[in-house]
Structure formats: C-alpha cells, structure tokens
Image (tube, rainbow, N blue to C red):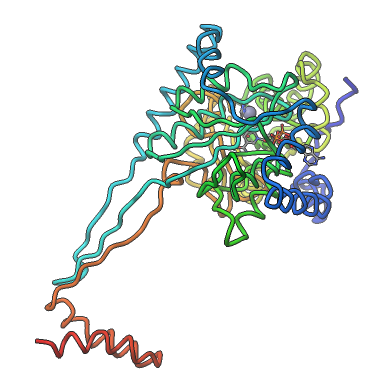
Length: 436
Ligand SMILES: NC(=O)c1ccc[n+]([C@@H]2O[C@H](COP(=O)([O-])OP(=O)(O)OC[C@H]3O[C@@H](n4cnc5c(N)ncnc54)[C@H](O)[C@@H]3O)[C@@H](O)[C@H]2O)c1
Ligand SMILES: N[C@H](CO)Cc1c[nH]c[nH+]1
Ligand SMILES: [Zn+2]
C-alpha cells in the first residue's frame, strides 16, 4: 500500500473555490465516454438480445460464459452447502430487514372530500421487478436482501435478479442463499449496462420488467438513467452509485471508531468518498493517525487508500458549521458521533441514512440493523429518498361521485372548464345534470 494522501484542513482557511472543490464528488470515469459506451451497449442488446448479452458477459466478466440462467438445482446446491454461520448471519439480517420493511406496508385510504364525493388512494405491487446486485469488485449478498425482502413483502409477481458472474463464471453461494431466502427463483449471471438493458427491454430468455432496482458502478447507473428516459424502457429506483460517508464528531468521539467507519466506506471502491467534519482539531489529527494505522491492515488497503486521496478531514469552528456543511454535501450516509447526538437530528435531514451515536457503526446499516442500504449518492439525498417498501408499489387514485355530489361540484367544474376553453369537459357534467 502506498502512503496515505489525506490531510487535516481548517475550513476557515479555504477559499470559496477550495471549499466547493473539497465538497465535490470524485470525478466519475469520463462522463461522455461512459454515456456513449452505455448507449452502444443498450442498442446492441435491443438488436441482438441474448447473443449480445453473452458477448458482453464474456468481454467484461467471464470469458467462457455460455449460459445466463441459474438453474434451480444450482440454487439448491448453494442453499445446502453454504457455511452454517454465514447462513445464520443472512437469516438474522433477513429478519431485521423484514421487520423494518413490514412496518412500511401502506394502507389504502378513502376520504369524503364533499358530500357525495369519495376519493381513494390505493396501492398495487409492481408486477415485474428487476434487482441488480453489483458484483464487479465485491460479492454483495446483503444487497440481495435489501432488494429482495421488500419485493417479497410487496408481493411483486415476478422478481428477477441479475449479477455479474465471478471468476469461475458462477454466482456466490451466499448470494444465491440470500435470493432463495427472499423467494427469488429467476436469476441470471450478467451485469453492467447490458444486464440493465436486458431487464428493461427483454431478450429471448429474459422477459422485460417494469422497474429496475439496485446500486452499481458508473456504467450501471448510466444505463439505469438511459432506460428510464426512454418511454419504451422502464422505471428505476434512484441514483445509487459509489459509497459515501460523512461523520460529524466532537471531542467525545473515539478517533479509532471514526477511522474504522471512514475506512468501511472507503474500501468499497477507489471512487468512494468519506469526510470527517469536526470542531476539534485534536480529534481530526487523531482520526488521521488511526486511518494510517488501520488502513494498512485491511485486505483492500489499496482501494481504501485511493478513496482516501479524494476524502477530507475538515476542522470547523462549531457543530452548527459542521451541520451546514453536511446539509450542503447531502451524504449517502451520515454518522453523528457527538455528545447528545440525537439532539442534532432535527437539523440534519439531507442524508440517505443517519447513524446516531458512538455505538452505531455505518456497517450496521449496511448489513443488519434493518434499514435499507440502497441509498441516494452524489448529493441526490437532497431530493431523492432512501429505498423503502413503497418503491415496490404503484400508487393510484379512485373517485366515486353521486348525483348529489356532482350537483354540488358542477358549478366549479364547468366554470373551470370554460376558463380553459374545454367545452367537452363542461358538457360531461351538464349532460348528467340535465338527465334528472
Ligand atoms: N449506493 C448504494 O446503495 C450502494 C450499495 C452497494 C454498492 N454500491 C456501489 O456499487 C458499486 C459497485 O460497482 P462494481 O464495479 O463493484 O460492480 P458492478 O456490478 O456495478 O459493475 C460491474 C460491471 O461493470 C461493467 N463494466 C466494467 N468495466 C466496464 C467497461 N470498461 N465498459 C463497460 N462496462 C464495464 C461490467 O459489465 C461488469 O459486469 C460500487 O461503487 C459500490 O460502492 C452502492
Ligand atoms: N455501503 C454500501 C452502500 O453504500 C452497502 C454495502 C453492501 N455491503 C457492504 N456495504
Ligand atoms: Zn458498505
């Protein structure tokens, strides 16, 4: 591992441009190239279906790939042979995630808006959903639970899981076990933009879905964006890209805990970004030291070190200034490690998921507290929500009006229709009124 390139900086000493630069995300692999590459891949999948899907799988993931569907026999083999401890850990996480998402089951509602007029809000599960589980640099059975549990709870009729094959052309046993736990039987070994395109438009062997869910690298995120901009494509969940963590800490925080949390997100990928904002320069210096000590012990030390090069240790004047910076950055994950951490919550709403207090590591939410770890990145926490059960439903309205109700509303409807110059709209009301 090369030496760590991370320094402590005093926020007040930075110019406006420097402040902006410090809070900008690491540049994603040349944006226009990614856009064009993905466009070409999507067009190829639309034109050539399975054969293009297999070609890209051979090119990017497994040179010997000849098939896409994971057999039921292979799923059963994975379930039977998975290490008991790993199976139990997945079962524990399945339980907590299910409990938290079960509490989100929506209820239809009906309101009488005026006498004789009833309006209803109803929910229906999406029919067919596609779950993308990243596989490029790490195996993520936990992501299969984060997507599979809500799909199962919502009662989506068809749940399709895709993930790129590993070095042996297979999907890991733990991923197949997690998928099986969520009742998923339709599984394909393919990844990247080509898998997203296959889910959105369909191929000979994969029927199209209504919505694609899941995080991924810049190719996956770009492909989701492109298929959702196309009327013949499909809906998507949210932009969930490289992992991020911002920690607000004060003198009560343990520097070793904060360093461990920062590294836990830095190890995801070279384009992950982690930030500490603190009014304590002593804490910042100690966290830096702990990062150096802990990073070199990691299996993925090189990846974490690359991410740390684009990460920040910022010393501010007050906790309020730290809050302002966090709200501006809108991190995917926000950790509050201060005295009376919960008291800061009302001022901190722009984050995908918030971790409160010294004993709430971010990795707890990645795996097993029960919250969803598919969260908006790139600052989208400003205007996107974290993934939840409702994302697996369509919401629609119903209204029923009696003669009496229509009579009450007829004046308002016909007047507004006339204001808009839409005679037929008005006539649809008056014709009914004349009837009695
Ligand atoms: N925000 C969240 O909720 C969340 C959750 C989990 C993971 N993540 C993030 O997801 C990402 C996963 O990325 P990953 O790369 O490990 O796995 P991935 O599955 O997203 O990407 C791997 C695929 O990328 C494609 N690819 C690679 N190089 C390519 C190229 N040059 N041209 C075209 N396609 C190419 C290949 O098809 C390959 O199958 C990480 O950044 C991680 O931080 C985010
Ligand atoms: N931290 C990731 C979301 O940014 C999720 C994850 C999966 N496994 C471990 N972590
Ligand atoms: Zn993580």
